[in-house]
Amino acid sequence: MGSELAARRLPMMGTFIVTALLARAAAEEEVAVAIVGAGYAGLSAALALAEGGVDDFRVFEATDHVGGRTRNVDAKTLRMDTANDDVLEVGGTFVAPGHTALVDFAARLGFPVYNVSGSRRGLREPSKTWPWWWFGVDQRVDTDSTLAPSTLYASTGNGDFSSPEELRAAFPEDAWAELEAAGAAMANLAASVGCEAHEDDAWAALDGSTFESWIRANVAKDEARGALRSMCRGMIAQEPAGVSLLFTVRSLKGCWSSGDDDQYRIRGGTQGPLLALAARFGGRVALDAEVVAVTASDGRWRVALRSGVHVFAKYVVVTGPPAVVAKIRAPAFSAITKQLLQRMPMGASTKYFLIYDEPWWRAFHSGQVVVTDPDPATARDVYVYACEDHSPYSGLRGRGPGALLCWIEGACNLRFDGLTDDERRAHVTSLFAGALKNDSRLYAPTHVVAHDWKAQPFAEGAYTLAQQKAPGLFLAGSDYVAGYGAGYIEGAVRSGQAAAAAILGFTTSVN
Image (tube, rainbow, N blue to C red; front, side, top):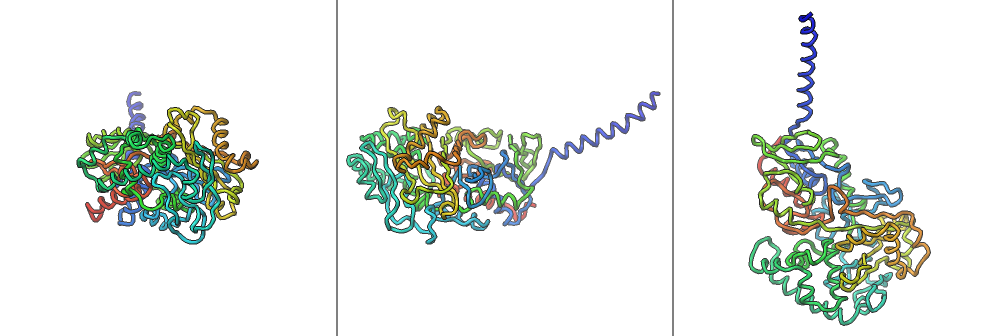
């Protein structure tokens, strides 16, 4: 009897051993390059590696879609993660003329850029020069002809404008004079620093102050202070009290972008190129694959996924917002890098859309509404400072839906969260009511879409301050770029390509 039991157990033990070995093999993978994150930085790195002859890579994305902080929604169906002429961008959107790496990347994947006005006359810069502090849209068409007006809500009343000259006429005169004087002071500061990343006394002095302290020292009128605070919210989705003066000076100097930042959009939406690239790479892009640790292991990197899978790679490119990257256990990150990641707060930004069957307002109004406010400490009922026509490509061409968009950013975003859905919609609608002649169509949108980036688990905010990264693993993304493109999709593309170039430079073949 005992021998019979033993005879029966042996096959069972063998099956158990084989099964255990297979499970272990399934839980371990080996690749030449592991890329954490399938946003613009991660997939730009992947494409550059593939074009450099390295196909042995895997991209691990924590969410169920590629795109990072870019995402499309179909204005007709509300389907997410699609690319067509009806999509709206609920994340990063605009492309400046100087963003050549992004323009080239998108074009090679079949996604050209187009003028935000929808004009067919080719790509060109705005033909008007707007004030240095302007936080609205620069120019909606490519001619100097009469434009549909925008509306300014100021303390002195409401006014329509179609040019910088008309904006000045609608703006309180004393506040305008202060802003011009502040602009001269800001130009002097910009002349005192360079764009190259380095530390010197001039940098240290500017970095020791916040933009808010500079505003209070240089501007007295509430309307002028409000304009500068709104400019800051538009740049970084944060309040000037939390933004370094050095960052502000370098941004206005043009260290990270050039030309009109909101001149172009990508046809098919900014997520479109990444959707196409992920489809091309197929199984090399893994979704719902959250990375929890990156550790050194016998001359390689061990990339641990929450699912229990361990991936061994010779090189690792880590991308993603600082608030998310900081949660990855990565002993190889230097102490400086870890401290840096803790000091990069994510901006609070919500894009709020009213969507219609067509952009009916374009016959008499640009759709742009700008609010200049007094001190936000007393203006507790102000949540929105800039709204515009953000219709999809088809709507701009007169054959698709229209969309009115408001940005809710900075501290205003946090207070906006305290409103009910009905209160939020009423507040946004009220901003357009006067500008659009209280047209009854305003109150009957087909859809309302509000995308709050701080509520997204693997973003936890919009954009953050641009800082120089410390040595360590390859760390790529718009938040870590010290030079041109910092804080923009352009920076994500350039940093991803730079990481891939560094890997390709170490060896002619890592396969």
